[in-house]
Length: 562
Image (cartoon, rainbow, N blue to C red; front, side, top):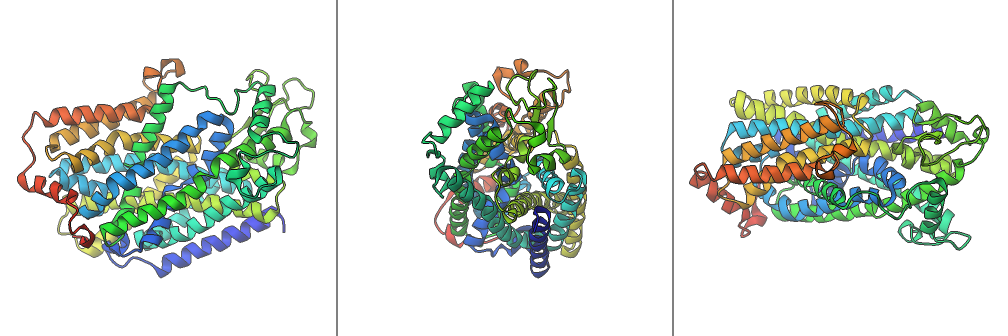
């Protein structure tokens, strides 16, 4: 079968699987819809958490970033990996012991204020929509190439699938769908890595092949450095970013991970605090499989790409090149009219434009792997994007139905009506997410990095201080969240969208990029929160006792949902 037939077959099978799981595990109560009834096993929750966290940015875009940026791209690898460790060790067990459905629920009760709850809802929606834009773009990119439909059409198809299993199954359906999606995405990521590693270095293990030698005895990374020099690019193994920006991006991604509402809510789906710790450990193992492979995939893809296109005749390009040209994600402009592709660092002479989001997806085709592997990677990319999109959409719908309607607007609402509102919220969220997927503010990983910055600027200080500082009160938390997220939004809009007078790289504050500015906004949030809280009375005694009980380990293993 050809690539398109394999893709239709494998994507069709996986989509059917998601729908069957959603029907089998459909939510019949708000407890099922929000936290899967709180009875998910640590192993299953670990897989679901890994799938929820490893989005299209991890599967599609991260290796593409490293492939183009080399050493500089490693900040995303370090930040996202370190962030999950931070979340698993520092926050997850405490939040699970608190036993609420959502992050705004925690903030509303911890800071004894519906204003704090509302601010948290707004922050959760902003973070989630920014994040989901990257996922929907990832879905569109996959469909555009492999099902040969426009990117926008691909986004619409993805919207329909997510809408079905997110609104029908809620967190219960999403959890078991994400278990299947993890299996699919990790298999799809690893199979081409095994193939290409063996093809280039003779070693089937990509992590070993990454540091291995090619058939001519040259080390892979030395070869890549040489190719980069010839084309005028910076050495693949050396960085060009300033140290402060590297630190800021890495730290923003780390603390942003620890503040992501759709990942945090996964720890409410298990029955005990001990299970939350175990599922965090399982998730870390499952995540490490992909994250230790991504640098190897990046190097393999970059080597094969350069050797395929640089200084080659355009008329002799292989079929994969023209297939990606049709999507608009690769374009060639013959500036000197010699019929050869000049792929160089100098923008005035460069004739080839490549969207970095295609590297993982195009990698099997560039390496001339079997058609079924190409189709498998497409199914994996969709699994990664859809799993995270579903988790994010559930956060948005829960914020609307539980934190706004149930907790504030209509406290006496029936469970059945609350479930209806949760599903209406999911429908609205899918439609808005589709718009952002069609009109994203950048490539997948950049958009996702901005979402992490927003989470770092808003949620992380409020959660950390809420757990570890009994004196932190509602006035400090509200002021910190509002100022933190507004500062991050201002910086994003100024330097990403050109608003408020715009600006260039030379105008960045402290030399920090928008992707790293979450660190600055987070520090401002901490300072504002701590300072303001000391000018107002301490929280009520019962709130301080609640904070003590969250941190108190004895009997924690028996904690269940309130």
